[in-house]
Length: 369
Image 1 (cartoon, rainbow, N blue to C red):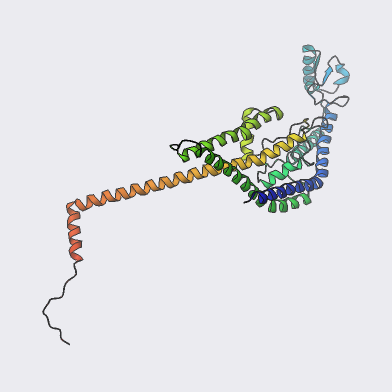
Image 2 (image 1 turned 60 degrees about the vertical axis):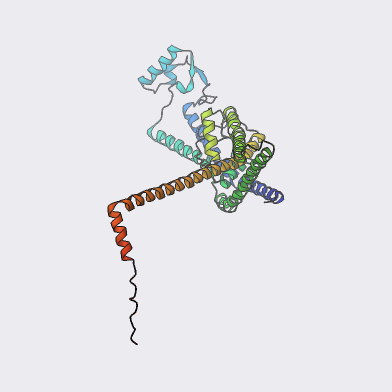
């Protein structure tokens, strides 16, 4: 494929990608805002139950309150066990986190409603890709907003499909069907273009080195060394460096970073780890775009690796089949030789030879018309 054609197809693919991101922004942003508001309202409900008279957010770990309170007025309806727990806290320290102070008194109906609200919110948040612990002050970044919708387009076009978030509106789901129907084959073509460019670069480098090294160097060994060099560079650019970035930006361990990189670039896409999802973190546009470029180029790089591994396995299978065939032929020759040299074999061979001798017509006989 010519460079001009490849460049045109790449430009069209980028435009198609941006088009999808814009449409998903229009179709899904309002619904995401409603779901986020529901998550936040559920947290406010829990706050109102836990801290009815508190001015600050009682679910925050650093929220504290003076424990030198009037037990009779504050816990008039609490059982003796709860009072004992409160007194233990009062005697052990002057201040404590509000979450550690026993102060909830609910009827069975109120408790049931609270559990239903919280579980419904958690289920909705999980389907939408929102951290269930998100609050208005500390929440998961919005996903259905341009340019972040490019990330969802990438999961569709590359078939990664993390599964942590998906379209919630009828229009978004219908558009996703047609967008993926035409976009996935287009993405395969783009991956093929990038893969061909990588293989061409490796071949050109190997030819360049072969033409300048002593003639006693094997071209095949030069090609292997070139492939190893580019694999090392690729691992550095698409695995090692991104892992360091994810450790610092996403607050993951190195094991989690390498795990995420493999699951993503191999298109397994479990969805248990996802970038750009930390609560209270405002990711820069540059980071979002850089990660998107890493995803597409890294996917092409991994496809080349899988191609080389598949080719190596196929070559190994062909060699193994050839050796098995050679071994079978050798066993057949040895067995045939031993059989022919045996007494039974010789008699049977003579018998077969005699059986195949054609009788000749007697000479000097007159034929009768």
